[in-house]
Image (cartoon, rainbow, N blue to C red; front, side, top):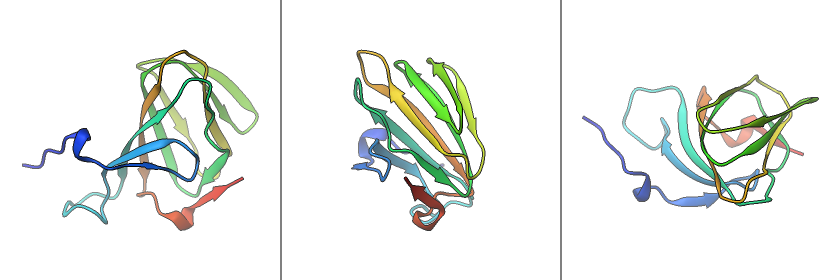
Length: 119
């Protein structure tokens, strides 16, 4: 059985300027997975840097209110919503609330630096 606490995952500032804790990644754990799973946090009024991934990404909103931008579309997002981001879509998210925006990121196949383009 494998269990990992979020508090035991180091918080980093990702290339898109979100505060990120990598929970699962095939390069970091001895698990047979092909995806990566991370917890992201963005402070009130903050916006992630526009970027694209060569892979599929899913956001699941845990707390807060955001404004999701994917290519030419922009939609407000709220807790318990899931957002599909297709490969190579230009994306960013803005925290439009007064508390931290917290969300889960799933990247499949797993996130790799060479698969991300920051604008």
